[in-house]
Amino acid sequence: MILKNAMIFNDEFELVRADIQTDGDRIEQISHWINDRTNNEEELDMTGCMILPGFVDIHIHGCAGADTMDGTRSSIACMASHLLKNGVTSFCPTTMAGSVEQIDSALAAVRDCMDNPPDGASVLGVHMEGPYLSHEKKGAQLEEALRTPDFEEFLSFYNKCRGAIRLVDVSPECENAGEFIARTSELCTVSIAHSNADYDMAMEAFRLGCTHVAHLFNAMTGLHHREPGIVGAVFDSSGVSAELICDGIHIHPAVLRAAFFLLGEKRSIIVSDSMRAAGLQDGESELGGQKVFNRNGMAMLEDGTLAGSTTNMLNEVRNLVRFGIPLKQVVRSATINPASAIGMDGEIGSIREGKRADLVILDEKLELKMVVARGMTGGAYVNRG
Image 1 (cartoon, rainbow, N blue to C red):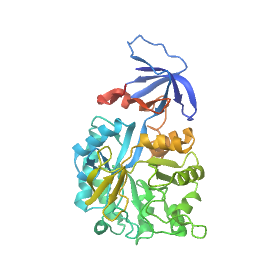
Image 2 (image 1 turned 90 degrees about the vertical axis):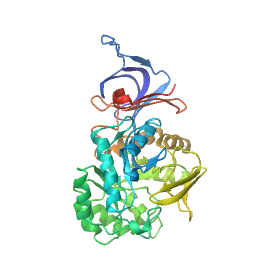
Image 3 (image 1 turned 135 degrees about the horizontal axis):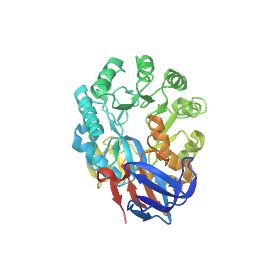
Image 4 (image 1 turned 180 degrees about the vertical axis):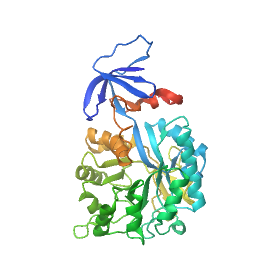
């Protein structure tokens, strides 16, 4: 397949005019002019469009009525199909706090989808959010399922799913958290989440091996001019990446502008943190064994606690552009930055010869025209008109 006459974000995330040729699931050639029809290549004219790397969502519990904690291949496959239609070509199904049996089932379903990919977005591995989280900042996590960080338990999870865990969250103020961070960071990315830690505790967690923070500002100590908290520690640590839920509900647009500016182009990461109600009509839903009410785009527990989001990364990209975030940083934050956070940037996240052919084509109004995932293989090709 040859995509011609588009403006593409090159490997430096600068917009340039170029053609892209794919071969199987790879980007074969990027050139100012490709005219090779010897193999009856399909040519598509992308005049007036931008080609971006496929979006990478590393924090998503569910969508389209499915949830990672369902513990079934069919639920992960449902998520993969729905996500592709909204520009996401790779994702990390995300767990919640639960029993050993529930988490094992979720990990096994994700491992199955990694080994035998369903149609749709690629399953990169698990983001394990819980159970090693703070009671004080539990958010929408089920309180009775929370427990002290336990490396041996984590190692059992990790081994049983054959290393499918890409990212695990922990609250650094919890007992045994220091040892957990130091040992677990040798296996996967370790992230602070749902934490009441102060600035010093967060900085110590970063020293021990945490390199990431889940949904910055939400369910953690905020930024105060005398008590910098976790948010201040992130801004003060150049080696730490941070997720941001950019639905305009979880974080005010003015705070998003400040955060993207302070984090810079390489540390900001867009995530949906969406739950099973994403993509559905308003009504009653479920998250982590708790009843959730979805009204006007807001998912909330009965006590009014925000329970994940109902957004998707395409809408978040549009939001950020509308909020005034530079387009280059927005694109990086939806693609190469999340890929880098979980060590997948050599395979996905940017448009470069030899990388996986995961592409999103948008028109001038940021309307989705086409998604190419794995070079159209496995039915992963969506034409949106």
